[in-house]
Image (cartoon, rainbow, N blue to C red):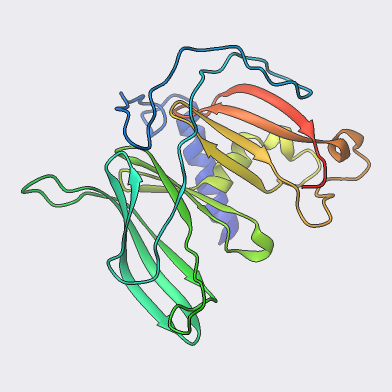
Length: 249
């Protein structure tokens, strides 16, 4: 089943990157909001970290803020920016843990019904009724029709990333594993990563994990450095590639 889902994601991304009219290919005029700062004039990157591969000048933009979704009660509303909210549609809090359904939707205009952008399930072993702190996933609306979600509640804190666009949902881990396979999968391992969303591009930063040899230890460059990719947010084309000292974190 998992293999089938990955193949489906790969097929979708093949269409996306070939130029078909999929979510990322139609650039939208983005209106700045509380979570959508105005883009400033492009400037040369001042990074002093070792670089590898592609060099490019990126726009000077402020990263959009991920907001933790309130999962502690039914109908709880979390504002995600760009007129988009996360609403708890169903809620179950028992001795077995917390289980909720989250719907992402555009704020309803006067006289109109809110439009759903996607639905996801969230479960946690932590409960609300016994006083435990149940933390939900974090999300950000990059536009009135697009939502990125990061869930750190999984095994060993391997983040799960999802993408919603006008009712279409994608497992972003699968999408990036397909997109960056030539950069990361040569030794059969796609690493955990941190996703940062900017108005016009994404930052995909490899993160350390556990004892932190997620690659073949014979590959010296992997032992010393982590990779960072900057991708165009609508086409996922690589704008810039860096490598940074791996360090201890």
